[in-house]
Image (cartoon, rainbow over all chains, first blue to last red; front, side, top):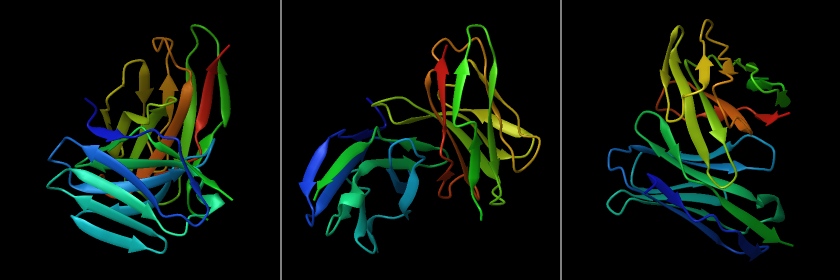
Length: 108
Length: 112
């Protein structure tokens, strides 16, 4: 079993939809959690970073962490075609462990 | 303009050859990392360094070597012992080891 599991998708939604991306993790020692966006042939770009359980909002993006169930989510409101990318969740205590990524396609 | 620069963008390796991938950062970050990305497998950690002249193996260090002689630079050598080197290699840095990591745009390595 991988330490961080993520549904690979692809996930296709119409423009303006609310997108929910999810990961689970197995290591209860993980203390910090991140979401990255990766466009094709580019390096991952940091979207959200949190230490604690609860919600963290930044513009159209909300990251949610539930340490009791070892569940992390990213919500994207009012999705745009430019949001089409692969989204990577990551968790760690010292080094990061990444999920395999979910490919998102937002249709105009 | 602060950031992480990886070079070259594309690299080809012949059988039995060692190749070195460059990673330079001007963010004044202490920690640097190398990851390998294969299709459908996410990022896997090869090596990381928390400070100059010190580095630790990650999950898949076999067939790779690194050095950290300067804070700004963390080159990765893919040796001939790495039998399946074709992948997308990503370098990252962070202020400290449990801080957000920032990535370069990667080097794509292929076998000739």
